[in-house]
Length: 313
Ligand SMILES: [Zn+2]
Image: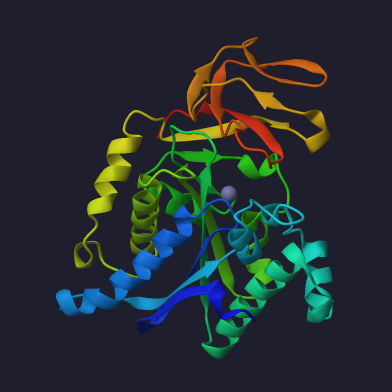
């Protein structure tokens, strides 16, 4: 097991959940790792500077795709955030670890750390917050799973929530980190904190971690300073509070997909609007919608997503 995978671990009072925050599940997304590292440092000093600080449970920060982070690539052989299908996980968990390479080894090490932690510390509740960033600018958002508790936490992160994302894709951490697969009460949430290399993507990820800790009662609202939260609230004020995914445009390397320049997350598009091109020709918007995660990087299987606002939130 590579010790570098564990960014930090902070153990508070007993009786709280285990919060596992994943950064760098994609190797070209350093913001989450930086945020986790800073959060670990803040947790160490908080009890000294703030005597009323109480922390219930355990915080653990892990690097997702360590080999890809070191190579400064999105992934080595395959997208690690598309490998979490139960059959694939079982294959990896039953294999001899010395035979595993690239993303298979990454997945195995992450799960070995988690299962060891759950067993050694008798964890009753596991919360997984998976931190990501996007190649495009202009939007931060939270992706809940279909679990109502995931939606509840997502809303408390103070960023736009995009529902039904999991219906368009397979094998993400959100698909896998559920009670049935982990053997303890488990809930997962994914947070996208902005563009890959924006400095503020780190601050927003810190705010999301703090809000997540509050939402699961690890910390009390007035016990932890959260100046970064203002950044999230300010940034999200003109964005729709809850949306849902209506379509995904999937791409393969052979497609030679090219997104037209200038699209940002949550930008409105009109039905029939030219969005991208590939070797087969022009690609138009199928509906009046908002665009999400337009692809502006070489590796990736999602060309773009279209989402629509849900009223009533
Ligand atoms: Zn990512």
